[in-house]
Length: 378
Image: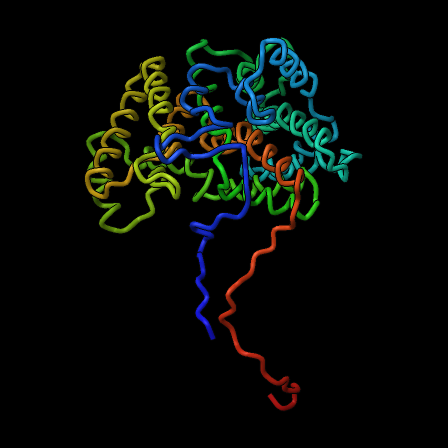
């Protein structure tokens, strides 16, 4: 019997075509529809990037205005969903509540079996508009605060801050947040995106695919790493402890979150841009605590690179940046979803435009076929 070449974790396996994003090997740069993500993050609003991911080209001003109007028109959650969210178990993780809320939205969509591209695009915009309110609603409910309805006059990022905190922070803080949204928006066939495409390929519907993607992203080896990074910084405690903490963790072969990536070998191309945003947050906040987190991050990074040659990924600077913006640690991955919903739905649309059921083979290592034995003879 010929030996089967098993690609564990699908490492190195090409499963389909995509025009959404690519890491360009010659520049080690992540690109969306051909544009370097660092250029988009620093020079565009996130809404422009979302339009690009869905439509393939950057918008004109008129196209952007129409897109923003469509997003704002889709804001607002049904009262039935808010009533259900009020009954969620106390202490449930925000990713679990978000997953359930998105699934609930699918219950109320009477066109859920319509897989036409135009319909999928409309549902994508609807999810893009509603997920920030789900995240903010869950945040307000778990903290015993009155809910804040979306403001139709505010742009995407400003509106999210408003729904969470009742006010919009300084433009420099909003810009740092907006940068993170663009950097998190899309990243080829990552675990959650592939999950979404697999579910979509069965014609289960866009809500099922997004719900499954949220479940995949929740894991600490994927989207949950940004939360783990902040917990790590809190465990380290101070810059004086950082180097010894890292050396001990490496010696004990602990899983250190926020470092390494399956795609990048010379460092995550998104990290420098987000690191600059993180440093801007430290400077804006200006407290000793903020400065200590920055120093801890630097020492942990330098020690890991010196000892193992492993570089940080996007979660490493994003976690503490979100913390300094005022977000609770369990919110970090739901905020990630607010961004990645653009990439997920672009891939769902792409999958269903020329669909083939994704059904890989497996390498069986169990018992060979054997005769059945009745229970009285076992």
